[in-house]
Length: 73
Image (cartoon, rainbow, N blue to C red; front, side, top):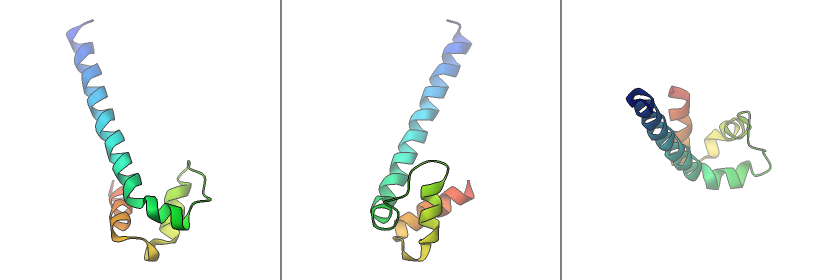
């Protein structure tokens, strides 16, 4: 394997690990709110985020911050 391919592979794995960690952190921040307000909502296609946004005024501060950071991206 060439050095360039190896470097690209290492970079891709490193980035995907941090992205997975970020998603897990976001889910943890909104889990209680999801369970309370959106438990019947099937994941995928942005449905969970849309449901949480509809309940925005009732969400925990932590979850509100996570949703706000998603909008900024």
